[in-house]
Length: 211
Image (cartoon, rainbow, N blue to C red; front, top):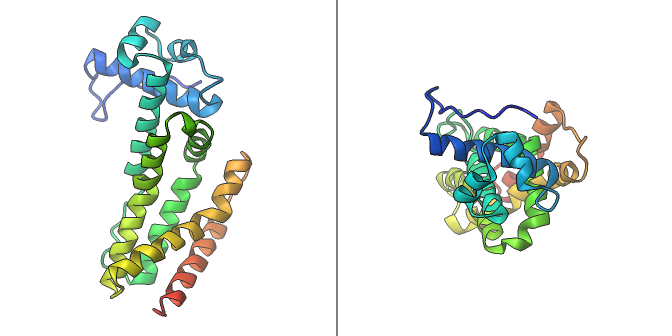
């Protein structure tokens, strides 16, 4: 297992309590994503992060509290990284949709994202309200809002744009995401990914009669 980084993004050591919490979360992320909730022991997390069980319980209360904190932390990571790093506001609509779609699908298919999806599906019954929140305002929700903005700028009504984006996102994710969730060795080449997104864009624009 990898060593846990306890430095802030600017390289300075954070407050000791913050550093310990961060170390526990990093360790919990690694262990929960690999083994799931049931097969994970808090001792595994302490062994990887260092510190003590007493400190972990003081920070998170119990195993369920640690799991909820891990889920929120992983969700926040996913949302932060979901928007494209390059600006798309001035691109023609087909190109903007292609850029957003490729970035979304690449991030969705990364190992940690697929592993987190498996954990949410298998363990979400324990925290249904959190699960609903993650699915409704998570990474896909962020992309949905960006795509709706692109369509409304092209003259599509907001209601039609919202409905169209639900279908578009499902076109992007369904074929490859579910196969990746079922098969840890599933790999999509860059060429396959680009063509898959391009087809989804064509379906969308043809359906909206924007081509």
